[in-house]
Image (cartoon, rainbow, N blue to C red; front, side, top):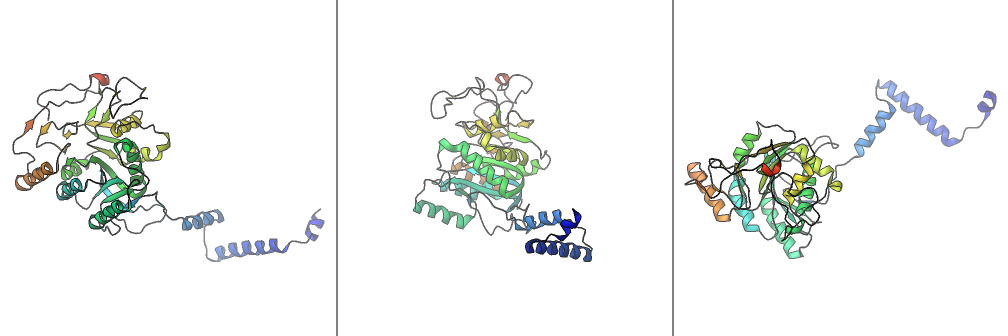
Length: 348
């Protein structure tokens, strides 16, 4: 048998392959290289990999403060930030965006990355051109061409912007806000330095909100409970990067409800999450008033934002006179959600 095998003619291609392999290992030996052939194949595959994002547009392509230096192409992301601010806004609300740019956006330092998130799927050429011009001037728009922006698709918008964030930014935390929100970025950033970077869900929580069965926010197929599951109100809350990653990587499994904040609370409900209720987040359906302790204030007009900003610049205070229109609460996590939120005096 051995004699017959040795006498069999070896095809020319096989000879060529054999010679190549012998030369390859001879070269490795001569160079005193310890890399195996399998490791070499992996390395070559890695060299051919180029980072690729989803269909997102916008942002400042020359952002020197937040873009990372050239690193390993396999792991590098386009931006790096300690805190990212993502604000849901509509295409036509440029005055609201300008008010934010002039006021509380100025409180963040170079470790803060800020983006206004806009769906452009239903816009005509002129409307898109206006947004492109706005972004050329400010470099802070995140445009979602696959999304037709409206209140009906806010959960989808949330998923898309968290997917972009997870794929393109190396960050620790994200502050999600609306275009009628005023936030103390300086204080939030400083306070986050002392918080955990794992599983943080920080905001003003509600656990006894009854499910809406009528109106624009009605939930026709909510079957989990007679109340919404505990969630941080969407006017402003903070998530750590690992929770954003969980949401971004499981979009195909997540059921969307009409409200984006209700949806997020439901998605995170089964997880071991650090839910931090903080009355300094004034994010209910209308503002509770003005407190110098507030970190986030929702339902603010452009004029109110500028007034708060001017007071901070002149006196270091949000309010000329503190006022409370309705009482607040601390969240009781020890009982059922329906008993969570008893309003009392003395809470901001």
